[in-house]
Length: 481
Ligand code: UGA
Image 1: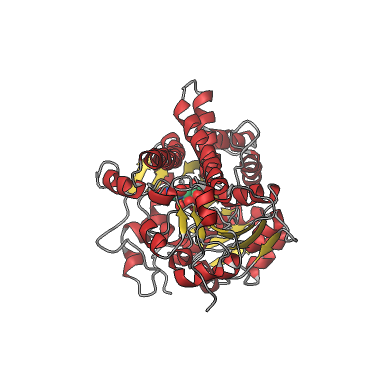
Image 2 (image 1 turned 90 degrees about the vertical axis):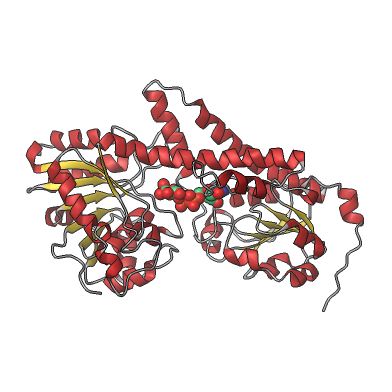
């Protein structure tokens, strides 16, 4: 692909996790020279030799295209920091025991950058960090003897969703740049110019997405503190939306209404919007649970009562328990029951199982004595590290293999293939035609027509806790083809 920029920027990205790797590939894609740094030698070797450590749409194409050209991988932070004009910090900020973000990786990287630089640099926080982190990075660098005029610290939070991270990066709703000086904001504007000017969207080989020449992404310039808060507040708000609709779903279930209709009715109000109103087993992943806790912690530190976020977390935890109760109500007892499970990752489209509701449910099923046959298109390898295969836990390679002779099938994440099952085949594959859908992928009426006992979240009919006697005495209408 041709270079999109008259004046490409040399960028170092420290950290090759989801955020760092996607940012590196995408900065290269829009024309910059990128040095992606990680202190994990094995990972860097993998990346240098064509390996791709995560499942992410378009990432293999971008890495293959730019590796060895505009994109290089190294463990040498010192040289990268000296060479680059902008250094993005994209290391992990895991949750500490108190719920606050553990910033020790950010601190270590800031110190090392300070020891390396000998010309003006913009150091950019990309990791999700609490407000004041920018201030701390500045202090750490100054304490290491770097003169004030040799660096700026900016904040440029990411809003990438796993699974669609490349498209989210190249076709963003917005780009947020928190900077205290014109010098820093000018460099960041230059970095994003291929997107904000539309130059990237005019290219022939661009990654397709919602943005285009007539739909340019806005770049919002803010203070560094506002940028830090924008990131935490965005994730906390989205998590709140999910918990909100999950409680509404529980009300619908009790009242005999359909939460899908209710969500549609709410979402058509443009002040509310229709996104992130899908009821289910609750949110998971490496971001929402950690960021809600971290933002709650930030509020506490600055003396603000954000009890709402406690409720959001509580509702999310209870949502899994409610779902588990639903499974129990359909099966009566668990010991020795064979359960098919579709979905292990925290959502479809990714291999990430961190804080996955599906993993929690599978672990509960196993502890109750069930035999689980699980299928996920991408997350099997990662799940095996947490739940090794054995007599009680089998990994299979198709939804039908998971359903084979099972007492019930559970749908726990939203891979598109789970919504396109051959229902007749599924019916004769299962031992009992019971489907318990934690993601509302099917229409209850269609499932009933196909002879299933179908339980989902927040919908009438058989999504009510069922009378187990009725379920087990229902004649099985299946027959092997
Ligand atoms: C989230 C945010 O959406 C990104 O904007 C942000 O950049 C990212 O965190 C981050 O901070 O790095 P991600 O965790 O990849 O992205 O996944 P989401 O698509 O947001 O889903 C999070 C969880 O909420 C999943 O478990 C998903 O199944 C669940 N969810 C989502 C629902 O239960 N209902 C919905 O309507 C939407």
